Image 1 (spheres, rainbow, N blue to C red):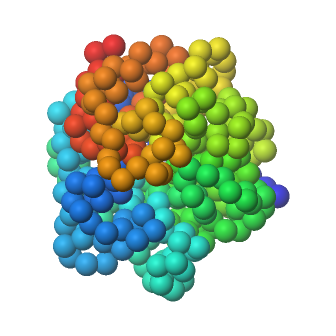
Image 2 (image 1 turned 90 degrees about the horizontal axis):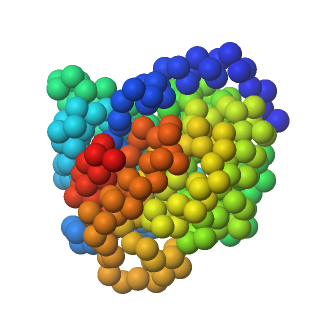
Length: 323
């Protein structure tokens, strides 16, 4: 098991401005769904990171992030720049024909792009955080044959160690379906010396795809990592899916700092089988999430996930601030 230095971990956390609690941070939306359904791009393995390797692709990514940075500008909010590396881990890289060296290079290129966005934010006096995005080893909707925590630590350490040697402020594990993989990510980040956040996805019943309750998942990760994660998030779910899981309250909610919602009320299975994008209604989505603010006192990071774009995130931020 990784030995975690709590003093070092506390220092890492204190450097993350979204944890200070006195400001709102905007993050992006459904990158891959926007590129596929709005732009008509072919993204094998649902991977956006190959776009970093050519000028038109980088330009498109830059425009994508600028749309969300504009929302931060409008609200004088911070910005969490999540790199387009959700699929940039070893198994997916092999499927896409990437060598270890090429994968390392593209993760670094993602941070270079993020620094361009950070510089643009700084011009307007906005605080931007660069987060290296870590995706699941398997499907983002299905835990499949889950790894042990030790296997997950070994598996994700390659990408995390690369990101830890860049200017990234943190790594964020997005769309985690099971606790063991989340624990492995947190341990790998601690060993590499970089702050980490974990974002769980839930089904329509508010539970992880493994059937575990969200509260139990967060508490278990904290218990088995000495609370080394900087914070937790929920993503790839509609507010109606996880609202009920928040109602009982509890100290664990202080660990939930970010939410990235889906536009659709459909289940993961229904979304996986869909051939058309379900964009939902941005205003209704925003209102539904804003109603949950009373249960989410620590949330400072707001964004979208599958099916959302800048319209949805703009509505979410406006409704949250007005509530």
